Image 1 (cartoon, rainbow, N blue to C red):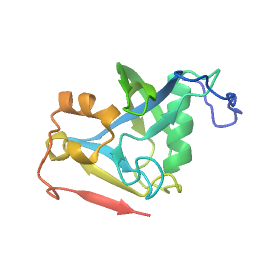
Image 2: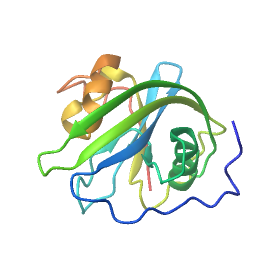
Image 3: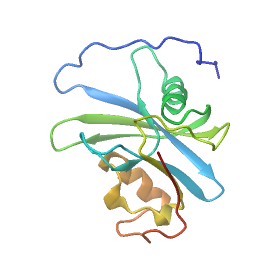
Length: 161
């Protein structure tokens, strides 16, 4: 994998109406626990949980976007291993999101969260309450064992900012 720490990502222009936003999502395991992050309060989808990651900029591969986004959001380096799934979700307000779920490892679990991350948790999939997760991540997390109304609080290790 190329080192993208010193690269300057390309910034896209405005997306045309109905355009699909492409996103890279990090699937990070610590034994049987999965890393999820919480969006900050306010704004669209505030305080919802999601897999770490973010938008794939023009000219980036999903893997490069994942490395950049994890570094920006959590202050650690991600090493992408494999694409697990590519899924599309259309939100009721019309935003279409294509998500590339990528299994990866991190060089550290000692996070320095940015303002884009309100909190982090390591949870077993069956502990993730899908009602608190971004709709676009729910189907993938369901396949890993998450469910609505899962054991709230059980086994959670949370780091707030």
